[in-house]
Figure 1: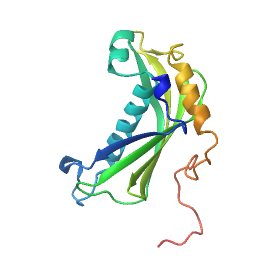
Figure 2: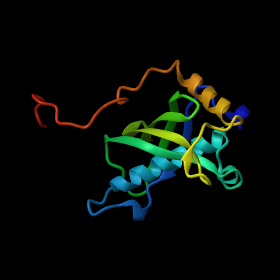
Figure 3: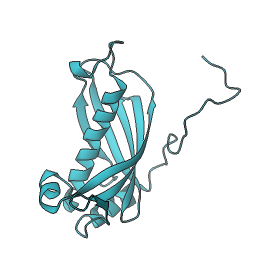
Figure 4: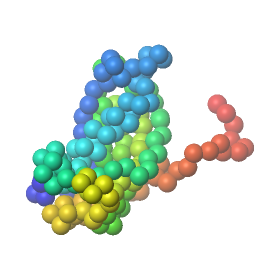
Length: 165
């Protein structure tokens, strides 16, 4: 795990748009953008040591506290998706994650997620395991030299005075 962490701190995951992911507009339904981003989060967690075996044996995982998605472009049946996931911040118990979803070079969507370490047996938050926390911190530090994405920290609302196109 720790020896396989990417130098730039970005975990890259691939997925393809499936027929069951389409909605009545014949493009990827909003729920499946979340599902695709979750595939990226699962890959990130496995990279730093929280995989299925760890979750089962240690009864520890993460849970989302908040998420924000922006939709930039449509995804259609069969599109090959590239999901890039990185740790923007980390405090030993919580992670602020940022993801971008691409089709080739076209940005399709972004997602920010605040998640927290969670003890499944106690059903309560807890600090990350001592074997996991250093890997998360290494990913966090590795991506710090990258520019902060423009989409980070946006809020939902109608911007007054901006013409509708």
